[in-house]
Image (cartoon, rainbow, N blue to C red; front, side, top):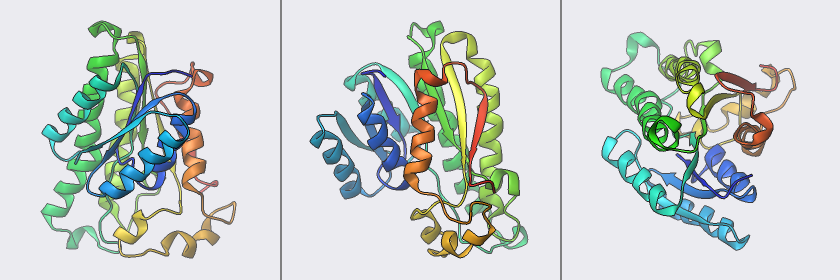
Length: 249
């Protein structure tokens, strides 16, 4: 598809890891952004390099603007930016109602899941927009089916943050459509990744598999396949759109 650079936030595990590996096989040079797990990020880089791809791991907490700036500075040294996958995100402890939520939890959720994604997109647009002398590109925002379901009695703050990402995807898609940049979103459903463990329910996806019309959980690779399709020229007429990859949920 291209030999340009793809920045993937939260690229060391789960959906981000699968996307990094998949995008590398399609010719992208990969910037693997990671918040804390350096070993996992280096393992992704090693896998890519073992197949003659190019990748580098960059520590980046997307809740911190200076980390985001360093992430894109690293990308500048690696080549011309062609894609951003806004995948980094957090989830709070499951089962906490709004009337029990501390302000700190909500603020951290929005700082990482919403503000972080918007700031990463800002830096990507600066580099890719023809208005700024760029050659165009693609931004993919990873949302969640929770944005449609609401997350009541589970993690309503997470669902609300992903609802914001959906709105941002539509708006940004319109804003930069005439500048060579396509913007699209993915809403994963119940996916077998580590994020459920951080919410205190590592078996949550499998426990709720019966609620999915396809009667199973999805894999990170299935989400990655959808993301790299949206990144490709095969999706050249897709912008401002959000694709549900949720087994029908």
